[in-house]
Every structure is written in structure tokens, then in C-alpha cells.
Length: 343
Image (cartoon, rainbow, N blue to C red):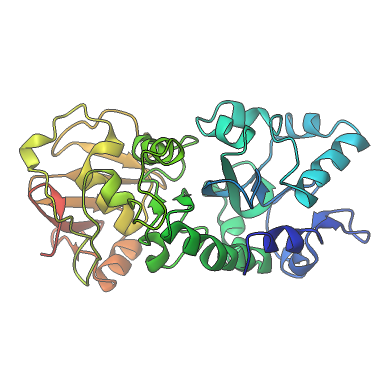
């Protein structure tokens, strides 16, 4: 598969004459199911020049606001201008896509063509992290399967050669297999729902674009290495173990949550999301709240993750930790010298 294949595929996106909704023909049967996506306006799986942008960011889905989205499409010309970007992203003007990107730290990179934002699903909604029906539907959409295949077959090989840098914001929604999340040239942002790239990925992006990263053909740091660790692969009963360990006592309270290695690594392994990645970490034995009404405590030798008994049991069956014997709402993950390791 080639980089330009995604443009050819999305050239078929159009307004369905039967329903008046903006959809891709491949998705129409699935979209007949239960969901709350807004299909009144065109949307796009990519924002930026997909073939030439050096940084590829995998996000969630198109945004929707009942007040601001209609303002972006005041007339027929606005609709046609938006569709023109889909059909010819390389020559399009991406500098006035949406006010949302004016507030994102990566927005200027998209505007000047250094980065492209890829949605796991293009269809619009206010907040997909709180929309279980929409999350379920994304996993069934043929277009989402195509986007995943395009990323794996066309982009990841370029990243392995040092020609692209991939930053993954939503690995679960994108259904990326573990070997892609840990591939050379791929970084997983530890705070998926944050509207910004957090400090580790942001630094890697800046270094890559300014030539401070590895040369073409050399390995590019993955999420562990960006934080100062070497890459490792998780085995049953463990959370990925970095080769270079940071002593527990060396992590002071007040460190940004996204820079606390054991906290980040446990969240990555379990697919959890920091609500406030740049907020100060409260220290050992203090609660850190996570998305989905979950929470985590980092102790000197273990992490305790609080969730529903069903989810805790599923994590234990997957070998990611053990149910705490005194409380089935907690998963205990063993750590070593401040970072997760095999128990």
C-alpha cells in the first residue's frame, strides 16, 4: 500500500442522496446501527498533507459542537472547500481548518505541512471517550479498518527507516496491535485524551523535525526511550521493563504525571488514560485519577489500580497483574526500582 492510497479511498466520501448524511459508501450499512455520530457535515480522516508530512499523529475522530461546527459550514462554498482538502490534501490550505487546532500545540505543524492528523474514525461527535456506542461502532467500520491497514502497511515501514515519526494518541480506538505500538519510529502518548501532545512525544517531534533525531535508517525512540528508557516487551504477568531503571526515591512529588515512569508504564500496559498528564504527581501512596472513573496509586514496590471487578478480573486473566486479595476492585502490579517489571 502507498501513502496516496488513503486519498484515493476517501475520494468516494460523499453525501448520501437517500439520507442526506455525509458518509463513506463502505460504512453505510454499519452506520445504520445505534450511534450518536453527527453526519450532517462533511468530515475527513486526515488533516494535513498525508503524503509529504513527516510526522503522523493518530487521533480519535472528528469533533462536533452544535454551536461551532455549523459556523464552519456557513454556505455551499465552505462545503466545497472542505471537500477539496479531502480530494487534494497536498496542495490544500490547512491553515484555517478549525479553531480547535489553534489551541493545540501541534496545530502549527499541521498548518505548515510538517504533520498530518489521522483520525481512527472521521465521523463527528462531541467526546468519543464518553460515547460507548460510538466506540463500539468504530471497531466495526470498514473505513476504520482501512485506516489501520494504511497506517501499518504504508506509514510504519517508513517510520522504521527514519523517514516518518508516528505519534499515537488513541491506540485502543485505532485497534493497533502491540507490535505496532512498540515498533521503531512509533511513540504512544501516555495521555490519550489530552488535547495536546504531552512533553515526551512533543520533544521527540521537535527533535525529529529539526534533525536532532536519528538519521534516516536509524531506530527512532519509542515511548519508553523518549522517557529515558530502553524498549522492552511485556511478558505474561509483567508490565514492560525498561533496561535503564530509575530508582524509586528519585521521583519527587510534583513531577508532571506524564514524566513519572512507573505511572506512565502501568497506564500504557493497561490502556489507561491520565486525565491531567501535566498536573503534578502527588507522590507515593497518593491517588491519581484516571479516565473512566478509575484511579491508581503508585507505591514503592507496586501499583494498585482501581476499577470495576469485571475489568480487574480481565486484566488478571491477561497476565497484567493480580487481584488484591482484600479487595476485588484493585489490581496489584509489581514494580522494581520504581518501574514496572516481572513479579
